[in-house]
Amino acid sequence: MDLLEYQAKDLFQKVGIPILPSQRIDHPKDLKQLRIPYPIVLKSQVYAGGRGKAGGVRFAENTIDAVAAAQAIFYLPILGQYPEVLLAEAKYEPDQELYLAVVLDPSLRRPLLLGSREGGMALEATSRQIQQVLVDGEFSPFYARRLAINMGLSGGLIESVSAIVEKMYRLFLTYDLDLVEINPLAVNPAGEVMALDGKVAVNDAALERHPDLPVMQSVGGRRDHSAHRPSHSTLAMGPTCSGLAASAFDLPNLNPMLFPGSLGILCNGAGLTMATLDLVDRAGGQPSACLNLGGESSYRLPPDTLCDRLEKGLDWILQTQRLRSVLLNLLGGAETCNAVAGAIARYLKQQRQPVSVPLVVRLGGAHAAAAREQLAALDLSMLFVLDSLDEALTKAIALSEGAGVGR
Image (cartoon, rainbow, N blue to C red; front, side, top):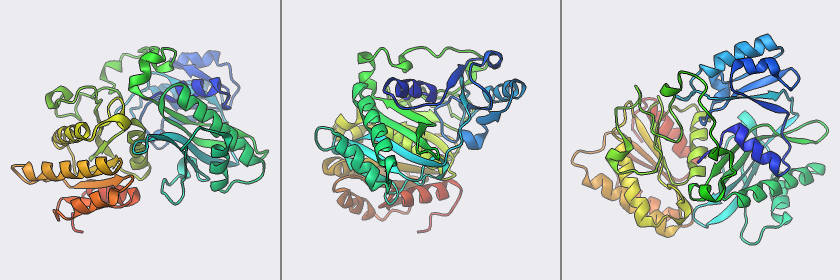
C-alpha cells in the first residue's frame, strides 16, 4: 500500500525529518485561507510518477494564480489518475539535490540503504551511481555514515545526511515499511537539508498493526469526477481497459493497474514496482499495465507461489489493450530466480500460439546469472534476457514504441 506525498511527509515530520511549511488543499477555494506565504508550489497528489512533466506541479506568486493553477491540476489526469487533494508548499531553491532510500532486499530479507549525489529529475538509477549499503546486523549510525561517505559527501554534509538516513531507517522499522524514499533531499548553500518529495510504501500485512498510518484514514472524495478516476490500489476499469477484471484471472489482492501506454510491467514487491514505474517514466516510457506479484509480503513469498502468480499475471497482462512489450523486473535468491526462469520457460512452451508480444526479462539477486543463462538458452525471438536494469528498460521501452525485435 502506497502513501501519497503529503501522507509520507506527515510521517517524516513525526521522526524529525525536515519538511517545508505546507498545507493540504481539498478545493481551490481553500487557497483563500492559505496559511503559508507566497510564492508557493502546488503539487498533484497522485501515485503515478511524472507529475512535473505532466503539468501536475505548478508555481504561484499570489492567490489568484494559485486558485487558477489548483483548478487546472484537480482536473488534470496523470497516467489516468485524478488527484483528490493537492499539496501547497513553500517554494524552495536548493543548491544541491540528493537521493536517499531505505528498501527491503527481497532476496536477503534485510534492509538496504540507497543513496546518490544526483537526486531529483537528474537521478539516473544505475548501479554505478546509486550507492548501496546492506544492513546485515543490528542497525547503528555506522551504516548511515558509510552510505554518506560512499556517496562522496564531505564535511558537515556527512553528518546531516547520516542523521536523515537514521531517521528514515527508524521510520522503516516502526511502521513495517517496504520503502522509504526521499527524492530529492535538497541542500541549501548553508548545508542545511530539506525533504522536498518523498515516497512511502507500507507492507500490506502490517496495515492492521498500524491504525495510525495516514493511509488508514480516508482522504475523502471532493469532486464529481471521482467516479471516473482510476486508482493506484484497484484495477482501473475504463476506455484503457479491455474489461479484464482481476478476478477473471485469479489474481486476488494483487492490485493490478492499467495506464494508457503500451509497456507492461511485472515485478515482485511494492518497492520494486514503484521504483520500476518511476524509472520507466523518467526514461520516457509509457506504462500500459502493471502488476506487483509480491502481494502482501513479497520477501516471504515461496517460489512456487510466486511462479503461479507469474504465470497468471502473464495471462492477464498479455490480454490488455495496446500492449507492445512487457518488462519483467524480478528479484530473488538462487532458488527464486531458478524457479522464475523455469516458470517463464514453461509458460512460453505451453502456449498454443507463440507469444506475439516481446518479453524483456531482468532477473536480479544472488546467483541470478545461472537463471538468466537458462532463459537465454531458449533462443526465442520474443524473449530478451538482459543482465542490467538499464539495458532492460532501454529495450522494453524501445519495443513498446514500435522498434523491431531484431537483436
